[in-house]
Amino acid sequence: MSFNLDNYQPTDIDNTEALVQWLRETRIDEIECLLPDVNGMMRGKIVPCADFIQSLDTDGLRVPETVLIQSVTGESEYYTKVAAEIDLDIYVIPDVRTARIVPWTAFPTAQIICDARNKQGEMVPFAPRTVLKRVLAAYAERGLKPIVAPEKEFYLVEKNIDPDIPLSVPVGMSGRREAGRQAYGIEAANEYDAVVNQIYDYCEACSISIGTMAHEAGPAQLEINFKHGDPLALADQVFLFKRLVRKAALNHGMYATFMAMPHASEPGSAMHIHQSVLDVKTGENIFSLPDGSDSPALMHYIAGLQRYVEPATALFCPNVNSFRRMRLESDAPINLHWGRDNRTCGLRVPDSGRAARRVENRIGGADANPYIAIAATLACGLLGLDQKLEPGPLTVGDAHELEFTLPRHLPEALEQLDACKELRAALGESFIDAFVEVKTLEMNKYNRVVSSWERNFLLLSI
Image (cartoon, rainbow, N blue to C red; front, side):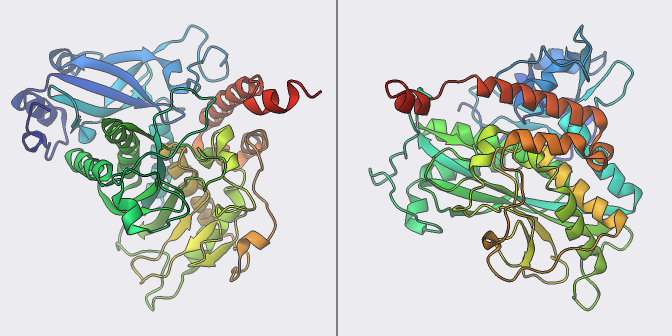
């Protein structure tokens, strides 16, 4: 690092003029224009600062529209429902409020998250940020403002360049590899202080509002909680957070992974989403009555999650690997029962005061696209509010002893999502079509892979 990060913190950038002033005053060398694709992967362009500023006065930067709907293997040529066969250009529109320094580069580099618009000036409907904005607009039309607080789990693992070899636990500061289960272990967490401290430094440089860190149950598995706030801002923060965590880990000779199930015999990693809803006029939390008791709105919201999260499961668990996390013998939820401070339930209402009354959706894996997962959970809750649905009975015991009702694998989840008219209306027809097409392509690719298990047990025995 050859420049002082303290001199590069953008403040009060809410228009193009302020952005250009900051870029020039801080002598930014280049800008990374970031587009989140359907998988939550970073796409976009890296542009010299002068060219970026010039693009703000012209038609702007362009990319092919299929950039947004690439599979994890980088393919997009089979999509016909949502993208033109000639692969038209779309415009990359910077959201000036997201301008941040990239804290690990040798020369001053900025990063800025962008929206995608077509040549008619319309937001590209299958862009993940557009999907979340669509849901937030539906809340605004009703005089409501949702608030979210994600919790993000991840593993640190030893570097591994051979995908056929299982991942290993990295060596900690003691020179030893962690063994056993050390949930909330302080000394276990201290083993990775160098990585964690750099994560916090990077988050501060990028204005990412994180709070508590804890060691989770798996070896070298950590959880970092985000402070509650605006859903779009939090989705942006999670989007940037995943990259900086991976970078901090690489700086210390290891990988960080947000796979839902990176180790076959260890707990999976989740992205839990706490959510509440405010009345815009009063600023009050609609989930609680003046006397502090639960409101009918809270019950309607929970009921919406109970009815619609199941067909939306693919949006929370979007990969083949995601469904390995949800097993009967794991701590991950297997159904959508709700409970008070009950972590065995898919939907948990934590003990709280009136202002903090909220629901925690515990279904999502750490591999979920933050824009899509947040949009989906808010859409499901809003459907419950609109339809005044009533939830099932409160679960007071172990919800794992009840029926496994969530989809068991990705094809089943995609089939349910594709058929749900309410989610299509809430999230957009073209988005659902694009998502299902991308994930079906990935599933077909996966099914053609010959695994080490097959070679091990079938090669010479059948």
